[in-house]
Image (cartoon, rainbow, N blue to C red; front, top):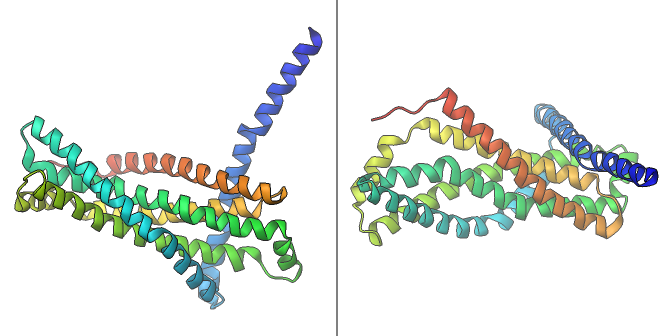
Amino acid sequence: MATADREVVEWVRGYFRRHPIAALETVGGQFSLGMRALRFLVIDVINGRFAFQEFVRQAAFMASSAALPTIFVALPIGVTLSIQFGLLAGQVGATSLAGAASGLAVIRQGAPMVAALLMASAVGSAICADLGSRKIRDELDAMEIMGVSVIRRLVVPRLAAGVLIGVSLTGIVCFVGFLAGYLFNVFVQGGAPGSFVATFSSFATVDDLVLTMVKAVVYGAIVAVVACEKGLTTKGGPAGVANSVNSTVVSSILLLMIVNVAFTQLYMILLPQQGL
C-alpha cells in the first residue's frame, strides 16, 4: 500500500510539473520573446537595421497562405450571421435591425477572430515548421555562434509581417463578411437594401473599427510570437517538429480566445453602448 501511495504521489507531482508549471513556463517564455522581439523591432527600425527583405518574403508567404482560405471562410460566416440575426429579428418584429446586428457581429467579433484563426492554422503552423526544422538541423545554433541574432534575423521580421497580414486579413473579412450578409439578406431573405445599410450605419461607430484593428494587431502578434517560440524550442527530431506544429495551433487558438474575451469585456466596460 505504501508503494502504491508513493506512486500516486509521484504521478501527481509529475503531472503538475509536466502540465500547469510547464504551461506557465511556456507562457512566460512567449511573453519574454515577444517583448524582446518588439524592442528589437523598434531599435532596428530606428537604426535602419531592420531585415526588410525577410519581412517582405514572410509577408508575401503569409498572404499567399491565408488570403484565399480567409475569403472562403468569411463568406459562410457572413451568411450564417445574416440567417441567425434575420430569424431572431423576425421573431421579435424588428426585421429592419438585421443589418445592424449581423454587420456589427462581423466587425466586432467575426472579422478579427476569423483572420486570427486562419493565421494560427495556416501561417503559425508554417512558421513553426520552418523554425523547428532549422532548430533540429542546428542552423539556429550556428547562427548564434557566428554572431547573428536569431531573434533579430528571424523572429522580428515574422512578428512585423504577422501584424501586417493580420490587419489586412481582418479588413478583408470585414468587407467580405458584410457584403455576403448584405447580399443574402436582400436577395434571399427579402430585406430592404436601404434599411440594412441605414441601421448598420446608425449603430456602428468608429470605436468599433478601432477595436477591431487593435484586436487584429494583437492577434497577429500573438500568432507570430507563439509560432516562433514553439519553433525555437523544438527538440526531438522530426517528430518533435510535428509536435511543435500541433502545439502551436492549439496554443494560439486557446490564447486568442482568452484574449478576445478580455478585449470584449474591457470594451463593454470602457465604452458602454448607447441606444438610438
